[in-house]
Structure formats: structure tokens, C-alpha cells
Amino acid sequence: MSTQEPGRTPPALTSLPRIEDLPRAGDGYDAERVQDILTSLAWMKQEGKLDGASLSCTGDAAVWCTFAAAVAPVKVELKAEAVDFLAKDADFLNRFFVPGIQRAGGWEAARKLSGQRTADRGQ
Image 1 (cartoon, rainbow, N blue to C red):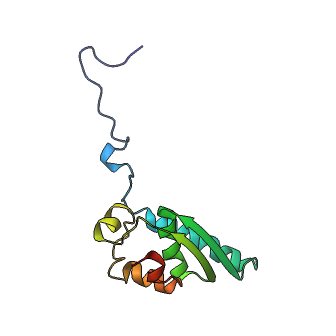
Image 2 (image 1 turned 135 degrees about the vertical axis):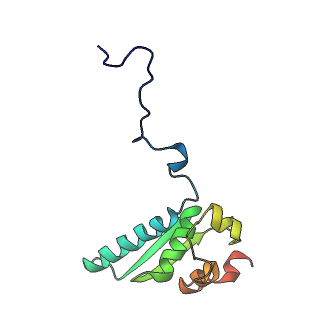
């Protein structure tokens, strides 16, 4: 049995997310993926289970791993193949959106700090 008067429309539901509020690629969740890697490494170090780590990553994960290895709390042996990440502004906007990352040194700084060489990418 409805308590609604006939001919009246029900009030709009305001608690449901709008489609434009739903997360999508490029919304900045890449920083969280890097933080997930760092949190795992820090926890393992704290538990005494880790002196160093080896990360093997491809695709977008290779970008996350490179930035994580650059600031990791332990020595990281990195095998990351981000072959289609060209480190252009468009790549950062569309595939690794972390505000201020270019100003902080960007891809080259992350590669140097993580122990990777530019020559590895054929540049």
C-alpha cells in the first residue's frame, strides 16, 4: 500500500552517487596504489620479514612500482617494464594522475631513485 498521493512524483533520492562522482581512471587513485605497495613493504620490514624486496611489474603497475621503489623503506630490486608510458603530461593525466608529481621530479627522478637507468628504456 502506497502512502503517496495519486499523481505526485516521489522525491528524488539524494543519497545515491551521481555518475560524475563515481571513480574512474585518472581520478588520482594511482597514488593509493603506490601507497599500497609502500605500506606492504613497510609492514614486512617492521615484522622483521624483509631486508629487501624484488618487484616485477608490467603495464600501469610498472609505473606504480617505479614510484614506490623510489621512496621505499627497504632496498628494492625493480624489474618494471612500462614500455608504453612515455612520461609526457598526457600520460600523467590519463594513466598516473598524482597532483604535483611532475613538480617533484617526475618520471626521471623516480627512475633514478629506484635504480633504473634511462638507457633501459631505449631513450
